[in-house]
Amino acid sequence: MKAGKADPSQISDEGKRTDESVASKLGIGSRDTYRKEKFISDNRSNLTPEDFADWDEGRLSTNKAELLYVNSRW
Image (cartoon, rainbow, N blue to C red):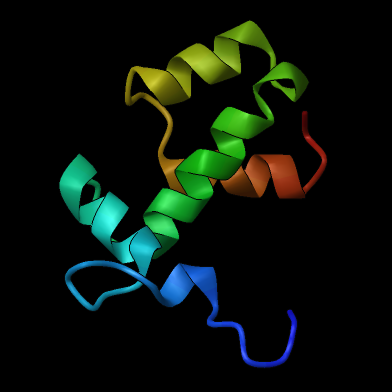
């Protein structure tokens, strides 16, 4: 980041981190949940269609889906 530039994750109209604002508006809880869900969505091509469908339909938790990915299951 260049000196004197604000961290873009810190800028929002409400004075919150933007990832917190997005999570709140989506109704998904916290910025950490938003970050994990974004990671899973961004890496969808690395998932089996069944695993992604299980996560997308709520049969697999976001935390478990991320851990499976991190542990190289996918």
